[in-house]
Image 1 (tube, rainbow, N blue to C red):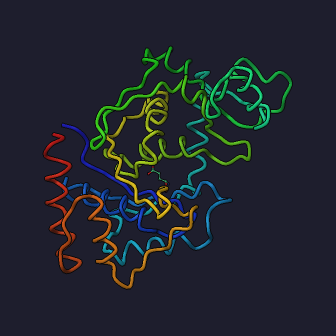
Image 2 (tube, helix red, strand yellow):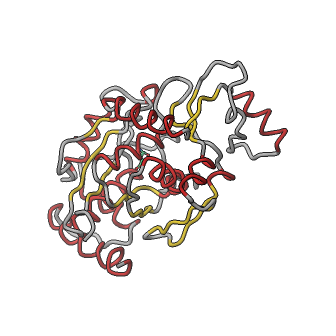
Length: 296
Ligand code: GLU
C-alpha cells in the first residue's frame, strides 16, 4: 500500500489570491477530500524581495472565507532555510552541485556562442570557477543522471495532461539551487518541502508543469519520492495571457465566496451548486468522476 494521501496548496505571497490561484486552491482541496486525504497549506515566501508584507495572512483569510483550511500546521518556507541548506550540502557532498560565478551577462554571451536558447545554462562553471567568485549554486544534471542511471529524457504522467517528457540537461541545463542573491531557488525549496510534508499528490496550475521534470531529477538526487502530478487549466486575462499577479489580476472579491468558487469550478468543468457547504460537498463527487476514476 502507498503512503496515505497528502496534498497541498502552496501560494507565493507576492500578492493576494486571484481567480487563477483559487482554481489551484480549489482543485487541490477537492482532490484531497475526494481521496479522503489531508490538504496542507504552505506559504512559499522564499523570494523575500517579491513578497508583499501581510499577504500571507490575507491569503489564509481568503482561503478560510471559502471554507478551505489547512488540515495541519501551515508551513512558511522563510523558516526552513536550514533544511534547504542541508539538502544542498548533501548534493555538494555527492559532487552533484557546484558553485557558479557567472553573471547574467556572461551566461547570455556563452549562450550566444554555443547557440543555446536563452533558457539553457551552458555549463560554464561545471568544471570550475576559473578564478571567479562563487555566486549561485547549480545542480549538475548530467552527473546526477549518470550516477543514478537515469535516462536523459525524464518521462512523467500528468493526471490531466497525460504523458509528458523533458530532456532537462538539454532544455534547461544545470539549474539553480541557491541564487546569486543568497535566496533559495523555488525548485530546491519545493522538492524538500513536498517530501518533508509527505506530499503524495501535487495539484497546481499548468504554468508550473514545465518545472516538474527538474523537480523529479532533484527528487532522485536527494533520494526523495516523486508525487503524482495534476496541472489545472489556467485562467486567462482579457489579453489572452495567463492571469497572474504580475499582469494585475484583481484580488478575489470574497464578499461572495460561492460566486468566486463557482467561477473556479466552471473552469474545472464542475457544476455550480447553491450554498457554500453544499457546493464543496457536491463538487468532491464531480471532481472524483472527472479526475480520479479515469486515472486509477
Ligand atoms: N508557489 C508557487 C506559486 O504560487 C506554486 C508552487 C507549486 O505549487 O509547486 O505559483
